[in-house]
Structures are given as C-alpha cells and as structure tokens.
Amino acid sequence: MIELCNVSKTFQTDHAEVEAVRNVSLNIEKGDIFGIIGLSGAGKSTLVRCINFLEVPTSGEVKFKGTSLASLSKKELLETRRKISMIFQSFNLLSQRTALKNVCYPLEIAGVPKKEAEKKARELLSVVGLEDRVNSYPAQLSGGQKQRVAIARALATDPEVLLCDEATSALDPNTTRSILDLLKNINETMGVTIIVITHEMKVVEQICTKVAVLDRGTVAETGPVREIFLAPQSQIARELILPKSAAVAEVRGGPVIRLVFDGQSSFEPVISNLSLECHAAVNILGADTKNIGGKAYGQILLQLPADEGSCVRIRNYLTGRNIKFEEAEA
Image 1 (cartoon, one colour):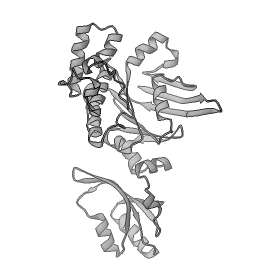
Image 2 (tube, rainbow, N blue to C red):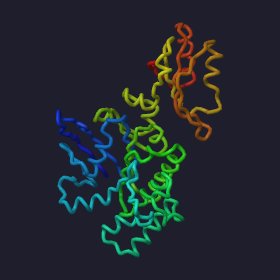
Image 3 (cartoon, rainbow, N blue to C red):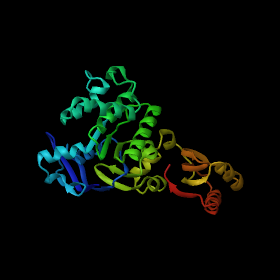
Image 4 (cartoon, rainbow, N blue to C red):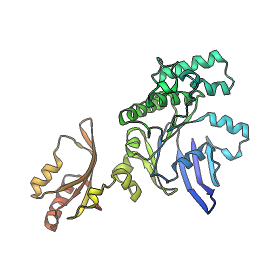
C-alpha cells in the first residue's frame, strides 16, 4: 500500500546540512500494523511526515497504492492526505470546540453538511468509547480521552492509513494499553492500515505485526516483530529490546548470555533447574518475559560464573533443552 524507495530528507541549518533520513526503503502492506522505532533523533518523525508529504523528501520516492505522491497535483495531494490520517503525541485538539465539534472539523473542511457531519462524529465518538463526552471540552478530558477524540477525528475522513506519531508517549502505562487496544481493534474491524512511530519497544510488542528499526536516519533492520524481538541483528535493536542499566554496566565477572524464550512452558523453572543441574550460580542482569497462554515469551540476560567449566556445563544444558541463547555484552 505504501512504498518508500530510497527516501532521504536533508535540512539546511545556519551552519550545516542535517541529513535526518537517509536512503530509507520500506514496503507497508494493506492491513499491517507497522512499527517504526528508534531512539530520539533517529529520524522517525521526519520519516512519517515524508509518508504523507508534509515533508517533501529531498530525494527518493513515496508511493501510495502504486502512485508517486510527487506526481500529484496540489488538489490530488490534498485528496490523498485525507486517506492518510495522522494523530500526534500532543493531541492537537481545538480548545474552544467540544469533542463533537473537534471530530466534525475535518468534515466541515470537506464540505459535509452539518447534520451529516454531526451524525458521523457521534458514531466515531461511540467507536472510541466517548459517546457520553460529546459535549465536553478538551480541558474537561483526561489525556487518554483527548487521544480518543483525536483518533475519532482522524477517522472522520474514512482514511485507509493512520499515522501515529508517538501517540502514547504522553500517557500513563494503563492508558497507553487501552489506546493501543483501541488502535488494534480499529485495524481489525475497520481495515485501517496503521503506522506507529515510537521509541518504546513495549508499544511495538503489544500492537505491531512488523517493525523497522531506525538508527541515525537509516534502517538498521526490518521484519516481523517476533523475529526482531527474538533475534535482533543490529546493535540498536538489541539496545531497544533489552536496554542496559547503569547497574548492569558496573557488573564484573563471567561471560554474559541472552536466553530467548519463544514458547517454552511458563511453569518450568528454567533458571532454578539450570543452577541445580549445573551446580553453578548465575546472575540475572535483566529480564523481559511474558506469560501468554501458559507459554513463556521474552528474554533473560544472564551472567555466568567466571570458571570455564561451569560455563561449558550451562551452555550444554541449554543446548540439550532447546533453549535458544547467544553471547552478549555485559
């Protein structure tokens, strides 16, 4: 549905040129929930604005349903942008308008009659769970409610693609989960392709089917979320999936390995059994595991003992039980 071909974007500052995005090529298919993740300054927001031509790429090509956006007239581009809606971290609601009137706003611009616009806005506010707040102003709404209004407004033009630029970064964890669940439901029930820009791996894990990892304006790696999560190939992906804490960095001792759980029974005490059978103590440096349907998914970072004999026994133990692991850095 959306194809980026060697897209680059350069900004001219007073002192130098800044290449925010460099030769990015991605293919986002209809129905995807596609994550674009990276640290601050990686070029995520610039890239997403290139997707709908709010930022015109310096070079390269952006195609929507096979048509290059650069080939469109101004009127055609405006029509296309109605099919590629966008929500933001800061909500961008009009403070002097109620929730209903905020959702009506893009319909008014499109020339939809008032009664028809209000009917559709009420339906969309019901979709996002705010049918009882239609007459509330933004100042009377919580952060999660404001974002729900923003989502309803973005859906008003019947978009085929929804761009979410750090849409949950200003929200608490519980509200974030509810907003992500809402977006996933919109994807499944309305068939809207969703592109999620974020710096949080947990957001990608919860909602996305595919992910591209950006590092200083370039794509470090891309693929299905499960594959990237279980076996990250780039250093930046490793840092995002299992970031190192200051405490971990100060640990000194034996080698470090990363255990990957991709469906083992969550009831099996893997670390306890490992220590007992190998007669060796290990140090857990970091962990991010989930119990999904009685199966364990995620990873654990372990520091092994300093003596080589214990390390060999542990590696043989893990290999014999088909537990994936790889060498890592402390």
